[in-house]
Image (cartoon, rainbow, N blue to C red; front, side, top):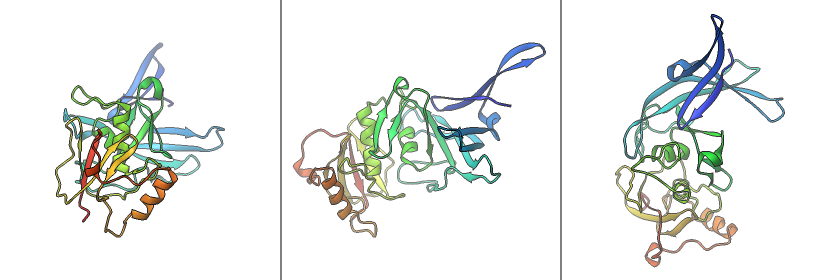
Length: 271
């Protein structure tokens, strides 16, 4: 049977009109009733077709910012339409407990509408449902999209306690990805411990930190002390200098020299 998929906020539903006993009725599937159904995804010409299978649906993942309620998550698997072999969509799961919060089902993803992103420039290109239209995002556990959603820095997950502007959402995107010079370069690695505070009073989970890192805005790092990867095998000193040169801006100065406003500040375990 063919249903039309729809994501409203963070909830996936499937609906269709069906003739039952001589009457047309509107049928809707959601939650566990979606398990084993497939989303059909085609390229622009229709010559290539994929199927995304919903292997599980849960409502146990909690938000990291108030109110600490739960959000819908989905375990997704994909295959070519011509194949019977499924591959997990979320293949790089985080630790169940990481530096930012708790992940309950580490192979599941959050689906959400209302925001869109340019992954080449690491920018927010839409921040309202009117701008994003019917597009929705798949944010695997551990990824920056899921972190934005769980920190209520998306339209779909905002709350009365946490409302954010596009610039604030983009500043969080820059912070998590360590796009220091607003060049579109993600100068970090998965699993790097990080603690942050926002100018609006939000904070991440408390972890041991040793070094001030940076202050962040929608344009990248306003200032930089000790980068989160300094002195590690993944040191990014040369890459930061190269990214700033390509962006035609200097490497950010030490934070003691900067007094202008910022959206987030970060500390790390770099020495």
